[in-house]
Image (cartoon, rainbow, N blue to C red):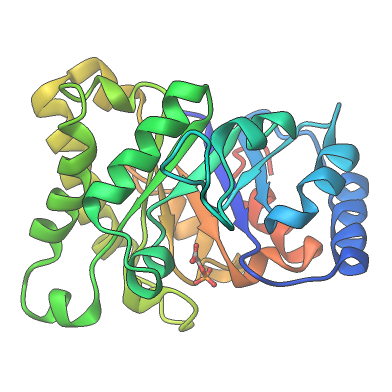
Length: 253
Ligand code: PGA
């Protein structure tokens, strides 16, 4: 059984004060859900605050990005070792905003993945097609290429301590969600690609869906056999909403 994961990507939102309020709300409102794990991804400056608030709670945390270098003269970059200093468990790599706005190629994303994994962080590797690619019938080819860059690292074993997130670019921040059937078709394909290399890995690999996940659509999405949770942007910025999404994923709710 794959435990569901609901991950909140806070992107570049919030202030120290707002982050404190959000963290307090999560800790106070958190019900211990056995079959759902929760994790949040604050901006770098709020990692220390997040560590302080969430240590010894069931909520995990991670970073939204990391450097593809180990250390050195890289102004403005943040290393895997620095994230570990703040007890990060996870790190998001290859989010479409990084790929589209900051020119991160499959090669850069694979290098970040490798650095993160080798350091002991669990990378959440994001893949997803643009609207133009979907309309051109290229969805599966695009996600296959993006995941392929990771699978090429060491015959797929690289995904043993990792999570995949399928995030169609046209559904991110737009209010438009892939239907459960559209998402499931891609998730199933991704799992099949992994299974072609390693069946055991494919069975245990968690594949999250991201793109306008909210309380009204999360249940239908996670009820699909290959959808193991959500990467939630906008709806993770309000703790009641985020906690409700997590509860709706639990079979005990
Ligand atoms: P959204 O963002 O939920 O606001 O669409 C998802 C993401 O970018 O991870």
